[in-house]
Image (cartoon, rainbow, N blue to C red):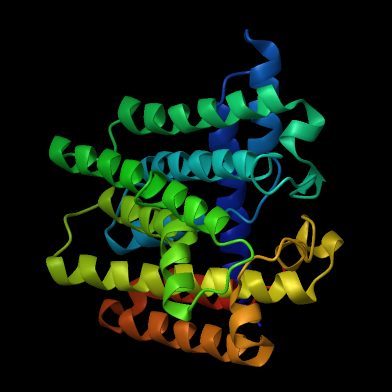
Amino acid sequence: MLAADFQEWMQAHAARMESVLDRVLPPASQAPARLHEAMRYVALDGGKRVRPLLAFAAGGLTGADTARVELAAASVELIHVYSLVHDDMPCMDDDVLRRGKPTCHVAYDEATALLVGDSLQSMAFQVLAQHRLSDEPQQQLKMLELLAVASGSCGMAGGQAIDLASVGKELTLPELELMHIHKTGALIRAAILLGALCGRAMSTAEEQALQHYANRVGLAFQVVDDILDTEADTATLGKTAGKDAANDKPTYVSLMGLEPARRFAADLHAEALAVLEPFGDAALRLRQLADFIVLRKF
């Protein structure tokens, strides 16, 4: 059971993220109106906002100004949403439902969906570059580089390429982990580090601990996703349930079985909590988010 104050914190920061995204996205009335309308359709009013929440929690560790963290968080969420739009297209996973509503290419058309993803990706870097998110210019350049690497062929896009190449194949657990360290973990790691980099400089040990936490939480997120894809229904998930099995994609459940996958998620959860111990009470929200990620039902 998650603490009531944490539920309130999550709701408040998710609402704040909605407001920030509404502010940075072009109005639907601005030309090209249909493209801007579609960008707002996919980015607003939906999703768990896990990556922004992790950015806010990590920013708390370094005393970061929340007004700075919210923009770093928005940049990560824009990348995440762009990836969902492209993932759902017929040339990728060919899905019709996302966040409880028709996917972008269904609600609009394939060409618009492609341009929506392109535009959201560009906007993420525009947000990072336009605003002063660190007192040190070199640190802000590091933030831009971090998001670029996490999004590209050595990060999320590379993970998706491995995923597409793995359909119908039997991967080993290390191969599956490598895929998800890229596909899911890279952006989660970026969210945590970007949030922290909005504040005071971290020691090498602190940054390494945060990276370790991010790696364990990012992998746990994917394991739980695989479990939910097996157990939950479409209405609960807000996307098509059982899609991975139907597409013959390797998952932690298909490789390990349901109960071993649950135990693996619990082990990852324990590792994530352990690495936060040196931070003390300052890491409370990161601990609670690890709990949420592993215990969630959607």
